[in-house]
Image (cartoon, rainbow, N blue to C red; front, side, top):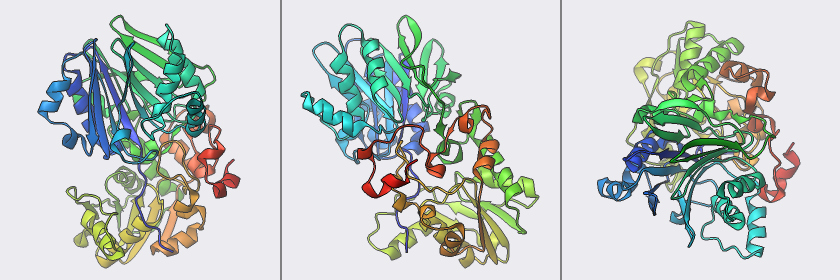
Length: 474
């Protein structure tokens, strides 16, 4: 059986800035720093206090914006932005965010990172009451809920809407008069608050602050709604029933190594994952290598803990586009070789430990092991710095069915055989939590473990799940 397709993809990143004369241009740079979180669409909405201007498009940030388009947006003092990877709604122009909704009273723009698990149910209820949807994105549901209740107190309408939606959401919202940042009660997706002079900034990752010269202030708290306007910053909560459960894969795979996610540096966490992996799964070898880019930190940690030298056994070509759309299996195989190359001089005649962050469908691992063998590796031992991914994610990662996940239907030994490795070991769930280093007093150290354990922090609604998946939900 062959597992074809992409590996893990995160949905998107959000950015917001209030109180800066170059708000739109700074939003552009902030989005550029978080391009790794989504490459299918980008957009910015900006306001001068009277009108919301916006521009968005399919493609990379550099493709969507040029100086002329940024100058057209750079009329105001506030902006929100978004880069997108489509999991819900598909990759069509109408779904590219920020979404902008205009009415006689005022306008509202929304950028959303995450997925709602009750969006289908809510959309049906809203349509029965007369709502007409222009996109297939679950983000539009949020705007309809806010507008449905919007009377004279916009903040109360926002809080009420957020108390109804379920799932993962890190939000930035913009009106002509205020910017709002909000996080779901579990904090499933990261969202940080920073300052640039007198301007307030919010972003999915702190690496965006570093690029524009902003200073990190704190993380947005689960269940929190932050309102920023000309009078300053105001914090409120739409619920007190919170239980932190940030996505574990933020530390393992998604976030940039120079970002700090809820007080933990990503590079340091990944090195610790590699060290813990070395403790749990040592092996006699000559060289350690990591799969570029997200696994390099873990590979360095593994090498430091074992005393075996770390080498660049694989090189990534950074100028190759997507390859999974190639029309034949033969061309798909060639596409992987275009993206990654084994360094023969490093691995030839050696026993190699290949450290990777995860195995999703198995295809990429099989091809990389094959590449190392073709380059002359005597042995290839695979070490994975996360537990086996056995359950689908409904919160914004493109693994919505267990049939896509090789570990859901195969044992570790079967996977080892399928990818052609001499040995295969995954990190334990306990080792992963300890290595990342979050608060052990919190449930699961404040991490979402659903893709490893099947225990979801929120209710999963029946219309979110394919029929054959329902019996596996805990």
